[in-house]
Length: 303
Ligand code: CP
Ligand code: NVA
Image (cartoon, rainbow, N blue to C red; front, side, top):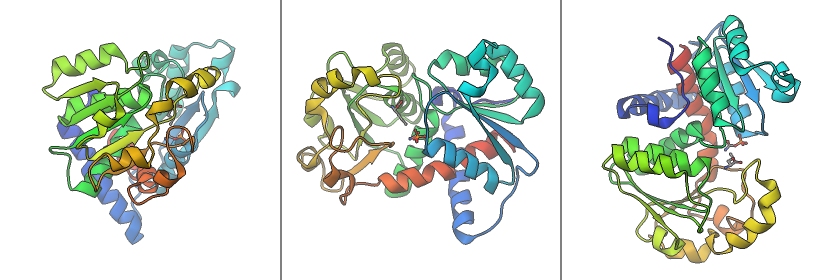
């Protein structure tokens, strides 16, 4: 039976651990210059309804390195944008390619693609979730800290797709997650409720960023206005003013705290230059690891 990657919540802890192990091996092989081409002759369709740098490049390069081929498709140029249905698109893709990655506004578009395609569907970000990002982030944390047992993560900022995927990941891997979001900008309440109901993990929602970062191993942030929310930018600048990851906030955490950001960053808004470029920041390793984890996901689903 084909598998999809639409949400981290639909993976088991064993499956996530397996992906982490695969990514470790794939990263080592790449660093040693060892060729590994299990996807020779396979193709991946990439559908983008929103902008991307990291996701597009890491999926395209990842497919190439695994011996396959990736086909970039701008949503605007597809018949989807002229009314062809998502199920029909899924059926047609299933006759041409071996997998599809989609980045969309509506999360339902990705779920619908997955329901109607007979090939694996990967969520490359929707308004609700960004699973590939957080799988890659937990890989980076594991690499830096030696594991995720007993991990404490503080997410500071908008309760968006990235925050929602952190909730799913914490529920699956049982680490402690504290989110500090302004009033009215919290994560998806049904995801939070499900995570609390179906796991023993402690997931706390607070309003004070200083409370969130106290004793944490990781401070994580993301943009205040995600793609699709640009028209709220001015209001958000005001509402998120106290949620900036700056040196004062970092000093309030543990001495060795790691600072992460999925990127792209709006420097001077959710994160200051000195923190982003400072000694606590691991954002470039984090960005690189998208490639290694994406390759693990591709080999797992399509190999
Ligand atoms: N972090 C991330 O998904 O980056 P892109 O939007 O550049 O793909
Ligand atoms: N939350 C951000 C993530 C970008 C990778 C957005 O959706 O725009």
